[in-house]
Image (cartoon, rainbow, N blue to C red; front, side, top):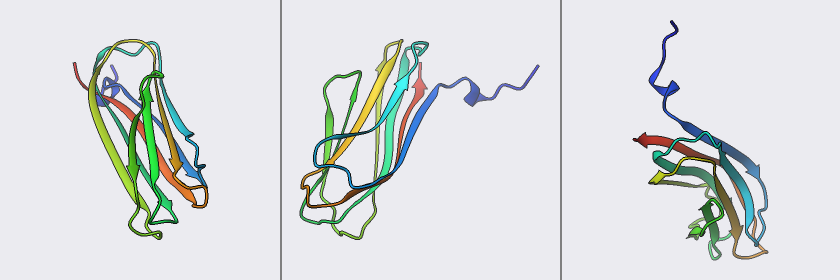
Length: 130
């Protein structure tokens, strides 16, 4: 009998995006995390981790995400230095129903005259409870 590791039994879903340059001033899909229909109900933690840069300290970067085409949740950040590479990490625990799910993640800049670059993004859904 083969050894079964704890992580072989804990659902973990992820997708990545990287090196998306000069993101628009209109919301742009950066990544979509698709969860299969075989997904089991339970307590999960949705998370994203990213780094980005923008060549302005007076305009903002907008981030938003949603579950299954529902209402968007949004962050707006104004960078403190145009030479910074900014990190952002977010975790959201929640009980999910069984079946297929889709998480959409989008970004935009507040002014077309700026350059907004995404360096990397990880979208993650992992089981944290029954």
